[in-house]
Amino acid sequence: METTLKLYNTLDNKIAPFVPNEPGKVRMYTCGPTVYHFAHIGNLRSYIMEDVLEKFLRYIGYDVDRVMNITDVGHLSSDADTGEDKMLKGAKREHKTVMEIAQMYTDAFFSDCAKLNIRKPDTVVPATSMIDDFIHMVQVLMDKGYAYFAEGNVYFDTSKLENYYTLTNHNQEDLNVGVREGVEEDTAKRNKTDFVLWFTKSKFEDQALKWDSPWGVGYPGWHIECSCISIKNLGEYLDIHCGGVDNIFPHHTNEIAQSEAYLGHKWCNYWFHVTHLNDETGKMSKSKGEFLTVSLLEEKGYDPIVYRLFCLQSHYRKPLLFTWDVLDNAKNAYDKLIKRIRALDKEGAVDAAALEEWRTKFAEAVAQDINTSSGLTVLYDVLKADLNGATKRAIIDDFDQVLSLNLLQAADTVPEEPAADDALVAWIEERIEARKAAKKAKDFAQADAIRAELAAKGVTIKDTREGTLWELN
Ligand code: AMP
Ligand code: ZN
Image 1 (cartoon, rainbow, N blue to C red):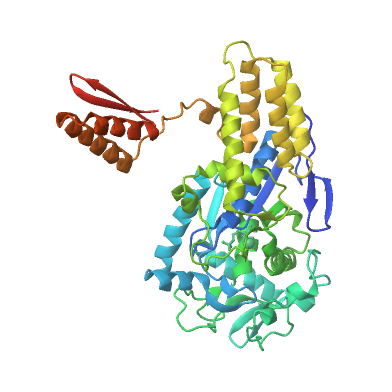
Image 2: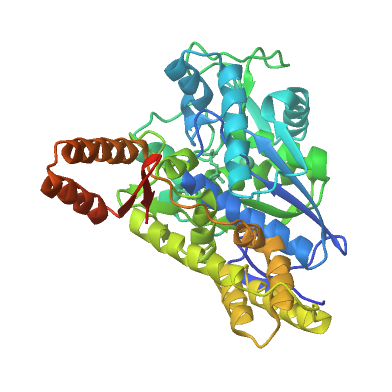
């Protein structure tokens, strides 16, 4: 199968054929979570769509090497290097140490990912495990004249670059992050867009994690970790870098600045950004009371895979609005789809030519800038096609390498009979006892009324020598 992926690239805002640096091989980097709290389902929209991108690249024959960081230090409350470290905020909230928080939420993140069939990247690197490498990179940037030391911190000097704003998808308003959030401006910066590579003068007194460095005891800025972890694990030429759109500025803009200053050449060719999922109140936030997590979906009785389907029904660059009603629609669509697959006949030989033909159709659909909804349409077309059940099942299983919706697995699981809940069972038993007492007292009208009452709730009763048996219809 010869399929060329056409991918939208934030670097030039165009869709163009994807060509990796090395034929057949893709080096892909993903900004991982900041592990100070559970991931919300907005974060997970980004990871689901990045997972589809990775799996699709594999599906069309690439060998993919994917790396993800875990942000466990240095991500401050404001992306403009101000405010409290998010990790410390989490630790205070839960009366735990920063490292306990990091471990707990890293585990929670991968558990959520597993429930959504998001493959764990080949390499996962916590920022705190690479401090020496960050220090080395900052030192090189100092030596090359791209960084300066002022009032206790090391800053990247953005005026040293010809084109700091390489990622074009932003405007001046986005650049005023610090100002917009009403945070004090950092007077040590030579230019407004300069950013911290290494903090020693802590912006707050009680930063828990600190390391020795040539500039004094301190901790790394957030952006340096991704550049460094990526270059160390994937080399100097990166094919695809992923994240949510909020990462475009300043995070990814700063990653490009420091990586290219360090390397002396272009670093990454394709930037893949997922547009946000919003709820009805606007932007999703972890500070809102009941924020939307995978556990909350489960508590409300949804299989997390339904949320994956919901994401796949839309294009990753379109804004997506979450409501419980739209999730219900996705649940109904999933249940119906599984029923149709369950009804397929498993007998018969798989038509290999048809499988290949449908593989191509599916690949061509998804290849148009990861068009997952078109891919789903091809799946429905397979169900309608004139093919035997075994061939349809083989094709569906093949598509599921990319979709990861547990399609055959769910279809082959016999649905459980709806179980009566405890309160209902207690009520039925109480009514049966009341009927027995009525019969004993020869109050047959009352006994019949109770039988009717049970029947109205879908309960059929049968009197046997062993007593009264019941069944829920
Ligand atoms: P964080 O844990 O805050 O570092 O974010 C993890 C990932 O989720 C990043 O790639 C963000 O860009 C992305 N993200 C944050 N909010 C949303 C959202 N509402 N919808 C989609 N992706 C998001
Ligand atoms: Zn990053």
